[in-house]
Length: 179
Image 1 (cartoon, rainbow, N blue to C red):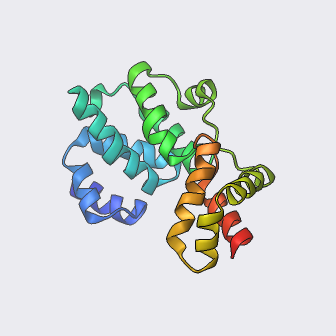
Image 2 (image 1 turned 90 degrees about the horizontal axis):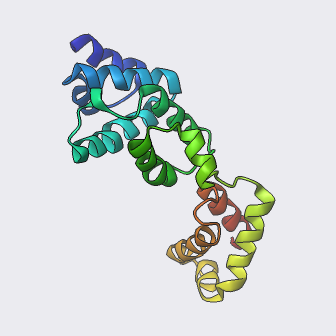
Image 3 (image 1 turned 180 degrees about the horizontal axis):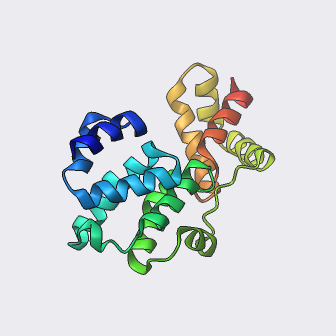
């Protein structure tokens, strides 16, 4: 366990607390390690395995070795998030819930539920312009230097896109259009 602990910190760049958490259970340590290596995104893998999956398993009264989500499936989900194909939010809710219930591959769930994140700049720019047109009060606040007002404009875009617009692109485009 100590070797894994040290390797998790040095190789994957996770915190000492996370490394300790994973190495307390050999099955959890092996699951996490497989996901981190296969996905190439140890930090996202740690978030999904150590927080989301462990909680879902505990709620279902299951151990990691009984997980309906294989390490391969979890690494596919982590890759989808890391690549920006789906939002972190959709992955942590809709996709994980469906994976727990059905053991389906995440890409299939994303396709079936239409959860692919919109990252087309012209499409997002149209949504941002519509948000600006529909929210003159918050727009005036943002232009007056009230940064918090940006949240309601971003929220409008996310609502209109049913949560599928890439939030980073939304923020970048709104900043460009308003500031």
